[in-house]
Amino acid sequence: MNEGLLILISAPSGAGKTSLVNEIVDRDNQLIKSVSHTTRARRSGEKEKKDYFFTTDREFSEMISNNEFIEHAKVFGNFYGTSKKYVETNLDLGLDVILEIDWQGAQQIQSVRPSAISIFIAPPNVQELENRLRKRAKDSEATISNRLSQATSDMSKAKNYDYIVINESFEIATKNLLTVVGAERLKTRRQLEQNEKLAFLLSPK
Ligand code: 5GP
Image (tube, helix red, strand yellow):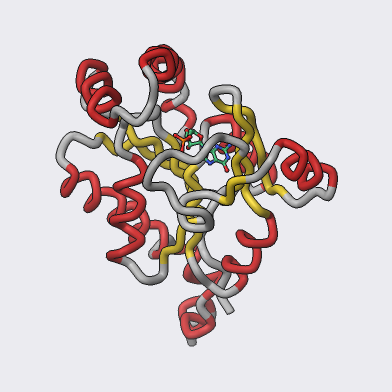
């Protein structure tokens, strides 16, 4: 069985990452999204197990002690982590797993799994980012301004990613993300290593 791709997607909050990831997962049935654990409070409309596993600080610390996370980080004062078992099981099944994580988590994974593909989703400009954060209106004013200043610093991390996708038009950004995934699946090294049917290309008569 071919191992799936591990795809890391980061963005400043308000760049539209979650909607884009949901869209590409809907359009491509080989893609799945990992559901993270978090200690942050649930926002209205969010569902347990679909958006996050909402956990207490104590449960989260136990998971760290039991080495259950492939990465974890503190973001905006709350803890977030990705289940190692979920990721490894699905990669082994040949599925391509997307992690929607912040730059700290992406850095941790890149150091243990250098084959992971990293994509940074950026807003078209800072004003648009602010408009989107305000429109979302699920957070308090203090949270919004905190996230806005955090976003500026997050954007300086874009240069460490393999790809940058600008989310100006949702449709174009969706297509660009699917293009990256499609191109990664077609990489020569990956196909020759993982696709037994191509053995004839390695030892032509
Ligand atoms: P939010 O609370 O708005 O859903 O997410 C806040 C930030 O935490 C976002 O940048 C999101 O990508 C990041 N995040 C969500 N899940 C994880 C995770 O499992 N690990 C890490 N490192 N960051 C995460």
